[in-house]
Length: 470
Image (cartoon, rainbow, N blue to C red; front, top):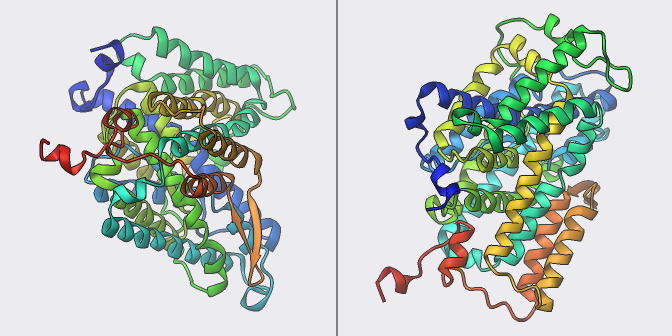
């Protein structure tokens, strides 16, 4: 057993409740920045298009509630086995922007909250499409589906998942490079030289120490390089201590459904990549057990629930996969603690406002590590599966995936029935990789026939012969 295997913790209960809580808080911090960014961006779309801000649905509190409850629902659907956190999906941002700017038919002069409700109705239908695909997988079997998802496809997609987020990390860090470097340095120091509990909570330590330094800098009258305040407490003063999230029941219309529902195809492709990344990270076969059909069902139900109460779509979060890789604590219980904390925070507007004051630079510094870890997992996926890049077909597939995943920075927008539909860069990359793998000659990959390769990325299923001992 090597050093890494000795560090792995699969049952966090042996660490004790206090340490489990700290690990849960660390996961909450990892997802928080990106999760609350989605409703902030979406609110901006609607305010710009309609001239007034949203007051119901698609708020930070509703988003946190939807993410927490969606994560718990996902864990129930996946037999409590998959250490995944579901946060706000960025894939649907283009759809929200499209609906915000609709000004024909019933959408003409429609109040901003009502228009957002119709957008959320499209999210519900998108979530239900997951269930249809999950049923197909259940009927035909995961082995036939995974035939189209060999390491030459999933590896580069995982790499793109991390690298596509790189610009976000740079953008956030550039607001104050000193704080970003402090956060990154603290994470590296605790991860490499930390002892005991400190070694498995490097991200939390990075956030706490960097935030403490930001407070000191603020008290000394220092500002960000652009002159803005390092920490803005205005929202904290206005927030109450206890309050219900501003839920809003969704509404349905064919136009909004045609805008939002097709994006589910894109987000499902990302889901498969995320499941491969998580499986490879913790070296467990989640695509086989509990099964890709169950993970898709959990993701879909979480998304439908979020849309139903006025929240953005949910998706499995790569940020938390990075935390798993760093902490080596793979117990799903820790993720569920983070989910419960997120739900609790949704009822405490004051505390939610305090956490949302986290300087963007600190989030950027943390993201340097997390996003890089995701891409590194993808590289490991390719290397450990011995993908033969001397073969032209493999080079072509990898090359096209990389260019699509990193080149289409704004996605690809096309119009169907006078409705704009946007596919994200990751969706384009996944679709291109799957199609090329299916049509190019020389596809010799057989899922379940290469135990060493499949196990290294966490998606091994024993063949029927092996199960019989032949």
